[in-house]
Length: 230
Image (tube, rainbow, N blue to C red):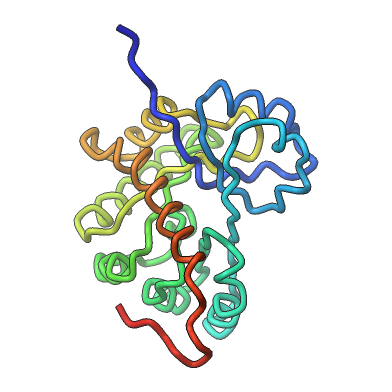
C-alpha cells in the first residue's frame, strides 16, 4: 500500500518576483505543497493563479530599534497573515520575545545573538514560534555547514526544552531549494529536530499557525489604546 505524503505549508518561500516562477509552480505541485508563506504581493506572480497553492501573506521585519519594531507591528499586524522578525541586537531580541504580535523568530537570525532559555520560554508564553529554514543548510559546505548545524541544533534543543513551538520552512530562494514533506523532514532531522517531533514541526504547526492567524484576522480590531493581555 502506498504511503500518503502529507501536503505541507512552507511558510517561507523567498523566490523574487522576477525569479523562475514557472518552474517553481510546477515543483510546488509535484512536491504536494499546499501553501506558501510569501513576502511578496501574489498579484506580482500571475502564474500562482493557475495552480492550487494557498498563498499566505507574510511580512519580514528587520527593525533597527525597538521603537521602529513596535511602530511597524502596530501599523502592519492586521495586513499580514504572518509576521517574522529578524532581531539584530540583544535589545531587539528581548523586545521581540515579549510581543505576541510576532509569529516567527527565524533561527538563522538568532545565531549571532546570545540566546538563553529564558528568551525562548518568554517567546513561548507569547505564542511565538522558532522558524528553522532548512535551505540554508544546502548553501554552505565543510566547516561552515558544521558550524551552522551546531548553532541550529543548540537553538532547537533550547526551544524544545523551553516549550517554544518550532516551524520548519524551506526559506527557498530559487525553485530548486523548494521542499516537500520528505525533504523538509530529512533536513529538519539533520538540523537537530528529534524524529518524534518532525511531523509536528514540519506539518502540524505550520498549518495550525495559518489557521489561528486567519481566524484572528476575521475578528474586529481592538479599539485604539486597548491591548489584549494573555
